[in-house]
Amino acid sequence: MRVYVDRERCQIHAQCVFAAPDVFELDENDELHYVAEPDESLFPAVEEAALLCPVQAISIRDLPGPRTAPQEGHPP
Image (cartoon, rainbow, N blue to C red; front, top):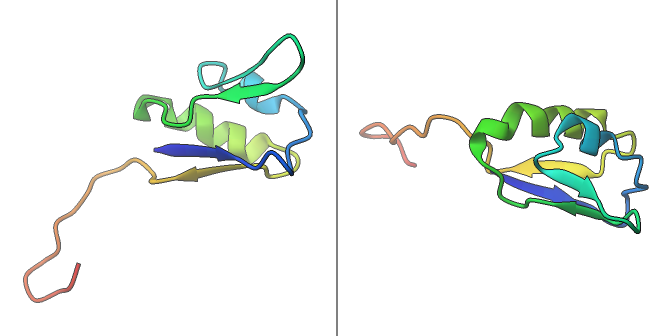
């Protein structure tokens, strides 16, 4: 899983910090820092953080989940 924060859009409402403190944090200057590739076990908290962001600045890429092999006769 990869987390991306659009810094142009982010307004430091800090809802992500409350929802997923192991991934998002504010420093003493109210600058947002985050773990770009958190452990997949943190997906529920990161998903909640993205949903709670009032300006929709957080996106999650490479979602966790089972990877299935392509079936014979079907392209990948």
